[in-house]
Length: 256
Image 1 (spheres, helix red, strand yellow):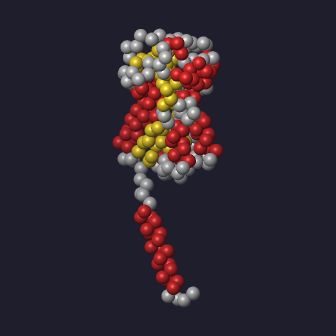
Image 2 (cartoon, one colour; image 1 turned 60 degrees about the vertical axis):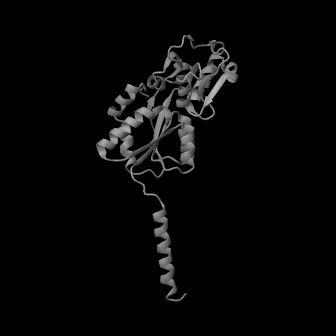
Image 3 (tube, rainbow, N blue to C red; image 1 turned 30 degrees about the horizontal axis):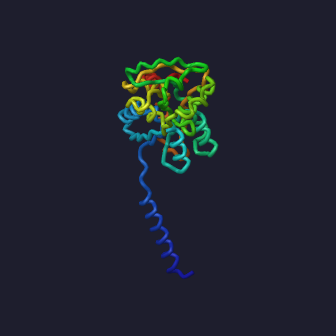
């Protein structure tokens, strides 16, 4: 190789690296992917953390399954909080999480709701007459195929012996907040959401709370995502602090 060619090739390589670096978006702050039911609490805590530390915290809320698949596909996230263990296991099995950073952050309860002012009365339990109470209309719930809230509901209705009876009357939502919205708007006479969702929406009322024995424990695990910004560990510690616990408790979340 001639002497003049080597410097030229080195220059080309340096220019290519510089162009690649320029094309890659700068990564500043922290990005949190969190289950839709955490919207108010995590949003409030993210704002408090930014005010205290100056660190920008970006949030993205959706169903746990949607967020997990986005992380698997390479979405830039630093911290993941989902609404059940299954989706966290999914990412852990794919080595998408930082080892030994996973912990259960909060818990929740599952409730049956109706639009505010509804005169419907349904008591949850074995062989509950839920299908009859719908009077041919549909029951709003998050899709059990991908959303934890829907899976908890399916487990509970199966334990009651009424899951098969409800199949034709289900209105499946992409996430639990959409199911909440359908009931709040009166588009569905009944729905299944978390207790915290019902508390956040004045246009619905709780008819009954599902027995905890009817479904797996509702837990929200949190973990750092592989490649997370070093600053994300500080936010994770803050979200697990007594101060943050008080915010979660105010919203109706339980201690795991």
